Image (cartoon, rainbow, N blue to C red; front, side):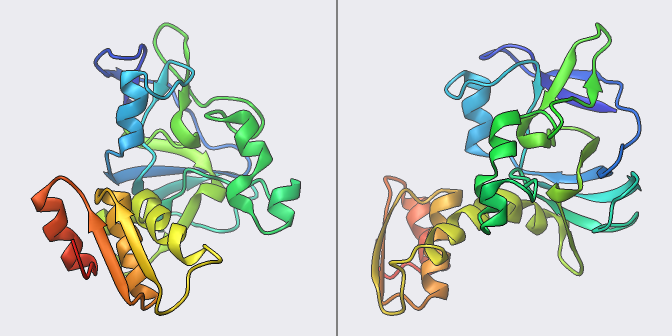
Length: 230
């Protein structure tokens, strides 16, 4: 498989042919269709977010299942999938309490799989980690089945965005105990996350949604997503 690998912060990504193999137990191999470039990818590449290297960046995307390992139960070959960069193990205290987004196993292993192993090796024998256990700047990826959410009748570029900025922004509103219909909300910064915070507030029938940004273009976008004032 081919992937864009970051070997050192503030250096160009290197397009590499990597050895990947077949998916193991509980693992899924997908052909990537669409990958977004998130602010977090930029922050890692410039060193603002520290991460073990070498690493394949990319954590907001969609792909098609091409192969599954043993004990995979949630997807089958041919399924279109949204890929999640926070995979829950299902058995730690956070997962058992319904807070899989705080999975202790995921936090401990970071960009390695839950058993602390990697799936990609370059020609020099370096083990390449996958950002968020995904590493979607690739033509094919192997991920844990917990990362895969099958979808139907949804354009793959739209599905890719749901993998990060849509769920992060909308989730920040609808999962907030203080959120309620008729509320007034201010959103500072109208990028991908901010626009979806606005959209989430609109979905909850907020009375007033005030968008703040220094970009007139972003403020115009914010009106389209539901801002009442800019």
